[in-house]
Amino acid sequence: MKRFRFYIKIYHRYFLQSLKRHLVYRSDFLVQITFALSTQIASLIFVLTIFEHIPDLNGWSFAEVLFIYGFAQTAMALFSFFFENLITLGRDYILDGQLDRVLLRPLNPLFQIIAEWIDFGSLSALGMGVGALGYAYILLNFSWSITMWCLLGLLLFCASFLLAGLVLILVSFTFWIKDSTGAIAWPIMILRDFAKYPITIYSPALQVLLSWIFPIAFTAFYPASLFLEKRTYYLHAYLTPVITLVVWAVGYSIWKVGQSKYESAGT
Image (tube, rainbow, N blue to C red; front, side, top):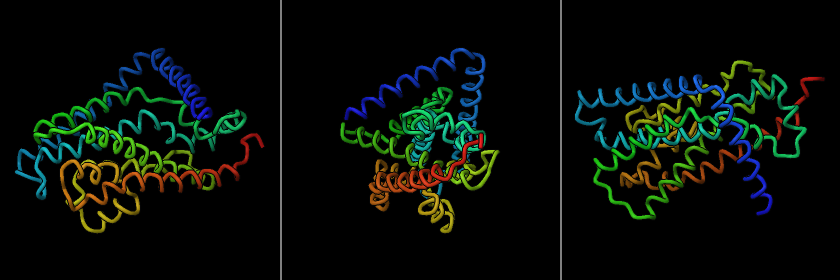
């Protein structure tokens, strides 16, 4: 517990440093937020446009799709806020040699990489996601207990961690595959957009891909189904924390093996 409190204190300092960097370049920060917000608005307009032409999406109502969309968007925004720096792990830390600096400190290297950049620009996306969830909550006439609200928080937390774990798995391969573009993480960045919609609208092969190969469906559709009372997917929803732990165990193991093979950029 003492070690945990120590890392919380260190993370708080990283957090403040990252906030200061954003505030120093305020114009860039505002441009980043504006761009992110416009992107999310365009994505939401796309959903609204779909339902202007059809009454439901393969049996899913507008309110249900909006809830899944909001869940996915909130989880992605939380991932970006806390874990965005993982995407640069291969390019900036492994290939450019910044990992040398990280390894010299008496702190967990992966913790340092994650904590060195907090993406405050993702707050606009977070607001859009929470707003979509809130509006869907009203449309669906939900009336949740404290337990359900806590469960929502837990599953959103797991979903964002799951996205981070999937990215960690891919970028850790940069220890062996010299990728200077960051493209190695693109599969997750592309596939995560599929999580914004019910998985049942996709082909069976794509459903398998999104559920068990790149389990993006566990970042939105399956946990959201629990709140939408889709009993068919209750087991999947409750498996979300388990899938998250498994993905992180795999990702961290690959990271540790790769770290042991790392050769300093100065050698």
